[in-house]
Image (cartoon, rainbow, N blue to C red; front, side, top):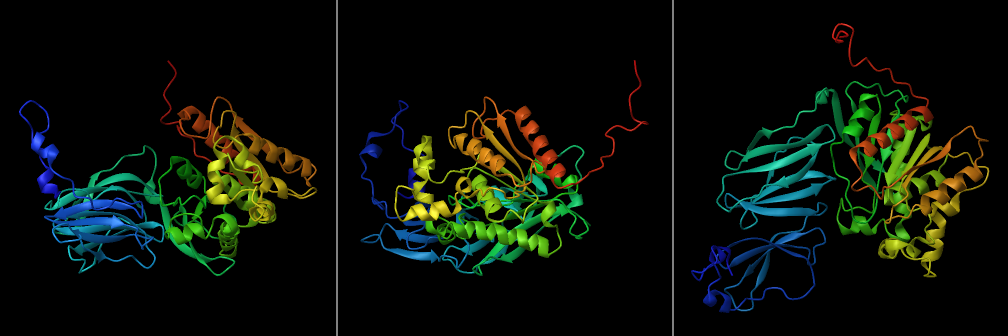
Amino acid sequence: QPRELLKPIPQDGMGGVDDEFLAAPFTVLVDEFEAKYTFIDNEGPRFWFLTDLDAPRGKVIEVDVSAPGFPRKDVIAQSASDPMESVSVLNNRFYVQYLRDARAHVERFELDGSAPHTVELPGIGSIGGGFYGEKTDTDTYFTFTSFVSPSTVYHYDCEKDEYKVFKRPEIEGADLDAFESKQVFIESKDGTKVPMFVTHKKGLAMDGSNPTYLYGYGGFKISITPYFSVANLIWMEMGGVLAIPNIRGGDEYGEEWHQGGMKSKKQNVFDDFIAAAEHLIASNVTRSSKLIIGGGSNGGLLVGACMTQRPDLFGAALPNVGVMDMLRFHKFTIGWAWCSEYGSADNADDFPVLLAYSPLHNVKPGTKYPATLVFTADHDDRVVPAHSFKFAAALQAADGSRGTIPQLIRIDCKAGHGAGKPTSMKIEEIVDQWSFAMHATGSRIEFAPAVTASTRPSAM
């Protein structure tokens, strides 16, 4: 039924729903699992939906429930490259949120899909929510965050097409204006262009001496979009560079991007990440001995695979709760559910693919691997700690540095895959992570004292 006929729901005078309303027949628009349909709004009998039917990156369709057979038509076509994240109707216009090169992008359209107009946003970042309201609302709110700005609420005037800060959190002692974030594009091994965010202090000299943290995930259709992290802020405050490439396996460019980094094409993920590392070195941001790689869960697999394939390329590795045994992962807890992403060693076609990059099975005796601190937890029931235990043991047994390059494991007690970890344990983990990274890359940071002599309180 049209939205205006559903509100308010008729009452029977006793707090219940009117019997006549309950007896009214439903109009079935979709009754098959052929695609995803998300209701946007309606204008009388004209219903609008966001769907991925024949459009893996999403499109807006209109269904006329007053016409025989409920005819459909495309209103806003699928983008050539940008996934359509959400759609709302405000001020009698569509506001479409896209993911463009892994960053937020908003377009405004008339209700017939005409007159596209780009809505200006605060910068390179992500929309955490917003652009919601009724069809006739002339203003709305949205949240926006970036690598250099915590989640901020903005007010948006639909008629003036202008936004302004409504509520911004303050971080005591942090000068966020001292940092900058940019996006570059790198070329992977097969010629695919991959976007990467690079964030650091303004004015940082690009002389190849900067300790650089290269973080990635690359799987399960998860996009890594700009986000704010105090832990990353601390890293950059110490003079470090934060680099995050949007490698294949995620959803940054839709399902094709995801499928380009799964099962038999998983090596593309590692090639993308290695290309990102090579770009950082070639552009003089850092050098191999100063380059640290990190990632968690599927990202831990990424780190393990890359450090065993190119041990010469990195100065340190920080795999966190990683899937390291690709031949037996499906034998433990929820691992069987990942076979749709990785394949299974029980399948004759998948076995050689998995064996070729499984971190545990590609540790070579006598090899000098980068300094490594493996992170896991004794109660991780998602990626069982045996993955990390075996990988750390294999690295130590194969150590070609004769003990001069540390191969360590850090095991949290009474903790799991990461969610729900108390703040105190998170702080301790970050301290160990950055301390190890700085030590392993030979980096030294001089901190100004937090309390100077002139401000230090006198003894009582």
